Each structure stands twice: as structure tokens, then as C-alpha cells.
Image (tube, rainbow, N blue to C red; front, side):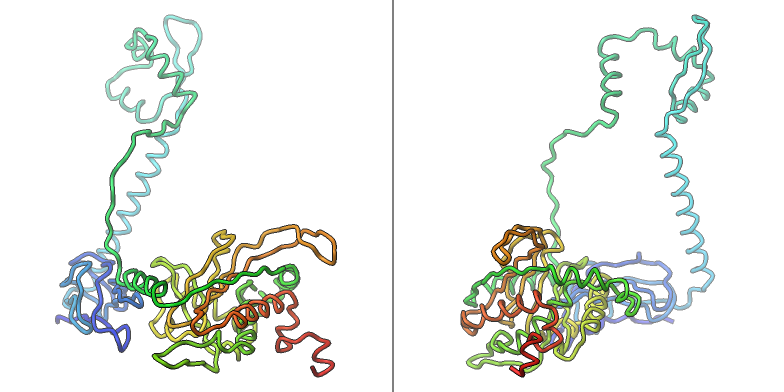
Length: 419
């Protein structure tokens, strides 16, 4: 029986996708639920899954644009399971042979010492020879003495080559290459390019900066990391603190959580915060829903789950749409300072950067503190300078005094005095 495999729908608004990459060859035997291809849209990368076991026949090439629900391959279920087992056994054998080849190749690189007594001398000569060279010598039915006699004489050039080989065992290829490689942009990359250009052209984007002393957060994290990991099964990072701080700051500066829709300003009363994560397909921004209702451990767990999905290319369109604010952390790559670009239709994005020990003034004295630069890019059409600066200052205050994260942004004195 021939079974059609159709393109799944990435989302309601998407009618066409691109065949990104076939993960198996045409004619290969596949198992049920095996991932056979990657299908790309302008919002996400999806997996094409074999619904049955059998022999695969590919109908669409890599790079082809196809309609959602169209047939891109078929599976012949008449192929017996024994063929699948044979294919797997063959694969195992091939891999085993490949491993043997690698081992032999590595051994070939290891010089071995062969002791040879030469007639012209009473001394034994230790000659370094690779296994391959030894095999060639033996196949020609020669001995070491005959090989040395065959060399007869070394000239200046030969000796210089030998000396150079000892001084520089690995000879680098200094040839200059001027080749090029052209790769078609994926639908996701094309869409991202269009959106980034649109942001620069269609928004009044400004960036305001501040710096935050990470000392207390670092101490808190180091002090409770073991207990936190044992209880929740995940490590405590820095992003969770910033997500919580951003949510509290958004509650006090709702315009930062707003967006423009035509002639109207839409202000969400919930905080859906996007976290930019690196993936094999580039930068992805999955969304944490209703952050205002989550605890720090729940935030940390959600970040890990979404990051794992991004790396494994399992993010759905729904998990990457609908955010009201975004956080991006260039510090994990060593960035000291940057101006992050807004993720439309949102109106603001917070950029985190590397933590560096720097001398700062603390109570009139110079101290070395772990400092981080913060950058808030915002659309000035909807967010005034007062709110943008106030928002960033609030985030700074919450991070420098973590107890405020549990007290609704207030310190202990303010709670005590009901201020």
C-alpha cells in the first residue's frame, strides 16, 4: 500500500512552506514516527514525520515551495521489516568499518622505531618508520639496510626539508583561497530580514542605557544554587531574575508593554515576555506566557524548556507569537554593549550584557563590583523618555535589591510602613 505524506500546517496564516532538508535518501526504508525532512515557513521550522514504516519516495526537492497539505513524499508499506533490519545492520557494519579505517589512519600517523643492524657499522640504528611505510618495504621484499643504501646520498635541499620537518611537524597550507559559497536564505531568515528593515524604517527607535551592580544576585545564586538544583532539577540562571524584574517594572510603566495597532494604542494587562535564544536555525524568540503569575522557579523551568525546544527545532508557531516585550542576552556571547532592535509589533526590548568586574564608587569609596550594562530600545512614538528611563531604573533597583522581587517592587521598610 502507498501512503501519502502531506505537509503539516505551521499555523492558520501560513499557506506555503519550503522543503528545507531531507534527512533520508530517496528509496530509503524508514520507520513509523521517524523524522524524514525539515519543512520551513517564515515563522518556524517543522518536522515531517513518517506516519508508517516502509520505503520512502521523495516527490519534492530541497528548496521547493509547496502548499500546506500537499503530498511531498510517499511510503510503500509493502517493503518488509526484514529489509529495514538489513539496512540497519548494513549501516552498523559500515560504521564499524569506518571506525576501523579511522583507527588505522591514526595508527599510520604514529612513527614506530625499528631496530636494524647495518653491515657498514657495528652500531644499531633506530629508524622511525610508519606502519604503512613498513608494509611497502616488506611488500617489495626489502630490508632497512637496502632502503638506506637506496637513498645513497642526501643533498642540501633534502637536509633542509628534513630539518624543517622536525622544526615544523605540522605544515600549514599557506595557499590563498578566493572561493565563494552561496547559500539560499531560508524563509525564516528572509522574513527576519524584512522585519528588521521594517523596524528601522517604520519606528522612531531610541535606546537608553544604565548599569546594574550584579553583586547581590551573584551572591544569592552562588549561595542557593545547590539547593535550588536539587529541589527543581534545573540550574538557577540570571535570566529568571530579569524576567521577574521586567514584569514588575512593566506593571509600573504599562506604556512599555503597549503596541500600536493602526490609530490605536493597545496596552496588554498581562506580561508575555519573549526570551531570545540561539538555535541551529538562528535567533528564535519563544514566549513566556503570563509571567506576572509565575514564581522564579517556574520562570527558570519555562526558559529551559523553551531553550531546549529551540535547540532541538521543536518550537511551534504558537510558542513564538503574541509576546508583549522581549529580553535578549548578548552577554552570553561576550557582548559588552549593544543597541538591541525592537521585535515588532512590540514597542520595547531589553538587552543584557556581559558581567565584568569594574571599579565603581560605593558610599564614597572605590570598589571592584560585578557590573552589567543594560540597554532598553523603545519606540518613541508610543513610549516617552520618562517611562523608558523610569522602567530601566526600576529594573536596576530590583536586581540590586533582590528582596524587592518578592515584595512587589517595594523594600522591607516600604512594606512595613505600608507605603
